Length: 193
Image 1 (spheres, rainbow, N blue to C red):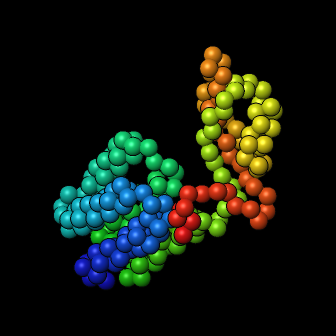
Image 2: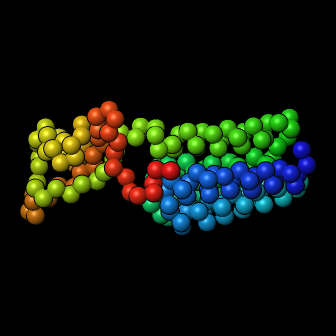
Image 3: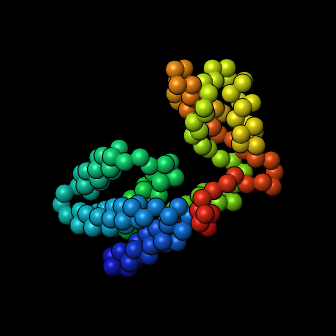
């Protein structure tokens, strides 16, 4: 497949990833430009290194270091990290193809399919995670679980105390929970598309 066709395929794939999957589901505008920028940047550098005498491994190693720095500079949820690395992978696949002509489009399609299915709002929709601040200092794990189940109206699977303040009588707790069959966890408007 010609190089320009591979570059165009990458741009279509990253557009589907960002505008078809990520933004309609999560609505975080700042990461749209990050995903597009990292994809096109990796695409450009990998494209130039693939025809250069400099090893592609050097360029990809540099992007690996930059991505780690970028990921540490802001708080990202795990699904956002998955989108980030999907954008990176799409940018690398196009210019560094060396096998069968069908392989790169198939791998790009695989990435998009996995992200579509893995981040689908219907997958595990009755499960949720929240960080709650309770107006009481709760030291007993069983009491904490019972209290959280009463507040959430859900079954608590795990409750991790992040901060316990005995002076101000507060407990900050991360809760992983699920609702009964048929009832889904509440989400922000527009998040489940």
